[in-house]
Amino acid sequence: MKTIVIIPSRLSATRLPGKPLLKINGLSIISHVFKKAEEANIGEVIVATEDKEIMEDVKKNGGQAIMTDNKHKTGTDRIFEALQKINISNTELVMNLQGDEPLIDINDIRYLNSQMMKFRSKLGTLASKISNKELYENQNIVKVMTKEDLNNFNFPEAKNFMRKVSNKTQNIYHHLGIYCYQKEILKKFISLDQSQNEIKNNLEQLRALDNDIDINVALSKSHTIGVDTQEDFVAIKKIMEYKS
Image (cartoon, rainbow, N blue to C red; front, side, top):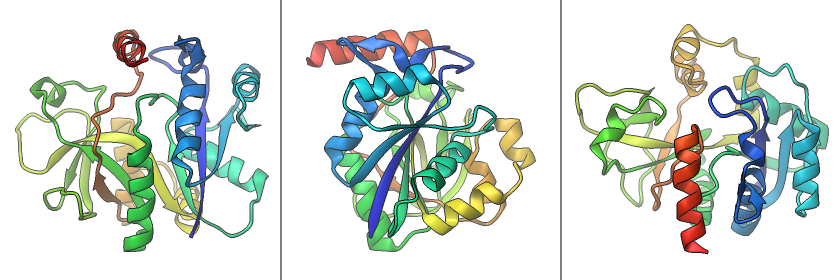
């Protein structure tokens, strides 16, 4: 099965405007992400953006980028437009990698891709175990509840996604910003109206569950955080600068 990785990115993020171009070790966040995707080596990597500055930055750093409409409600709409514009034949799987996850592990990207192929899943994502109890209350950290315990071999279905967990029930994990779609499911997903549940929680994956599209969840090896706030950026910058 042939996979393409598309990374949606825009400058007008509400909580941290301009974050894709914030620099860590002299390289923008968006360029760190596409380089990780390229290292994973599962297929062609393209950044889909509405901003010329992002496109120029990505190209300057050796990546591919494509301009998309600035009226998209979600990143998934953006990647679908990019997919139609590129029109690469024989693509069966579309990986939607969030542009604000510079710490994503390349082995996790590969693992999700292999689980999608192995289980012939329609839509898959990643989650990690929660070790820090404060994450349950943190609304910037999205949680996923799965139908069974996650382990290194299974790929169970998600029951629900939420921002806050009041009672620590079983099978709650930290959801990571990565999705892999069968091409036809992506097409179906973006044709659906945003659900009330999705709008209320600001979580587009709920649109899939609300329309009976199963989402399978694989256990990631790493515990990454995305850059949502200034605090996240400072924390991730420290980690990456220390590692280098």
